[in-house]
Image (cartoon, rainbow, N blue to C red):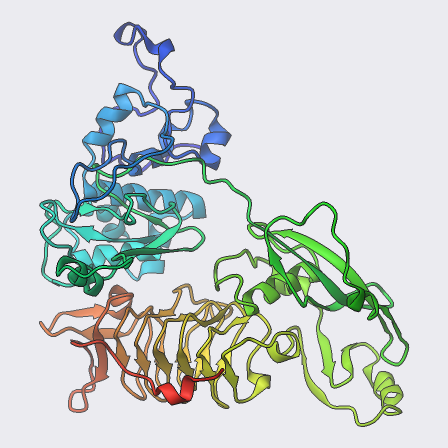
Length: 550
């Protein structure tokens, strides 16, 4: 792969240039076989020492910070190989704005995008993307944050002096200055490069006031293809982070006469590698047999899968859906690429799944057993036919698909809908639609008839999530991520391209506010403009009696 032709913001020197042997007489003694402290597929492709042109290693500083907002335990564990003086010099000269340019070019390289194509995704102009890739420092903190979120990165901002942390977006007019962009847990360990990092100011204030306990203001959730940008005083890479994630389970598959798998039920899916010697439960073996009326047979299967690889076959796909609905995997945490293509279209009846081909003859045979009720003709069955999640109420089982993730304390009313690979992470009220890929945080309410925009169809690319203690009002909708303690008024649909007026009369696209905490989105009833106002307090409060579902 040829190096990116865009200007290099770090330095004019060729990063892949061979160092002068005379300048490094003891080079053989240095462990420079792999120069990059962030080994990736690019390093494997180019071979030892040949990956410097991608410059991803510049995002992962060599020296841990000497100070932080509070005292933390020293960093321990294995570290990355020592880098060459040339790479060390280039990295030390790299400022925050230049690092963001590297992130952008890396994203374009991975997705084979031109600057103009990326500009179309962002709703920017091509010169704006070019300027951001040269030096993003002139961007406002909000605009830079929205840009990074689009390309799969998150920001956690801490001032250089470490007096008090600054959550992204608290001060709309704050210039970049020279903040450290760092994230760590209580022991000083950094998250993996694909983690989504957040900082909770309320917890930090409690700890600073002397509160005791195990609360940590820095938290992160692991999502695919996400990372954290850090200042040059950040952390070393720890380990290779190439551990395979696996799952397995015994299941009962419904197979047609031509060998197509209609469904597979896993009563107890399990995370981890399958044991070498495993015995199939007798109660499952008793379910194997033929059903001539439906034209199918049931088979007992044992399936083991790699959660980071794409599904291979219907039984593999059904195991992934079961992991989500058994709450063993969070939405967007496992690979579901090509899932639709692995599933058959099925006639779902009160007698079990049936093939679509020749179903009228199947219906006639089944009528000898009693009435035939067809609940749907679809690739996805109802969640309640396969999993019974604890602590959950579901008003209409037809409106929750297998693969939905419903946390304990969730109530899905009759007009609510939850798609696969979507759902709730805590106590929530669902009276509207949660589309594929959307997650709703603890204590939030999706009002009656409300909608969250998904990415399965229509060309949408903005990943939507709802933070904690949020309210999406009745008949409202969102096409951006909401942070914590946000409200969207009833009847207002906020898409990524919606023009929003801020308190200082600045007009921005709603996408630039994606993920911000404490916002109230309303439509001005006099002017008709959509406004975003700052909110105070801890958001909304749910009725505890409606969520005591045990």
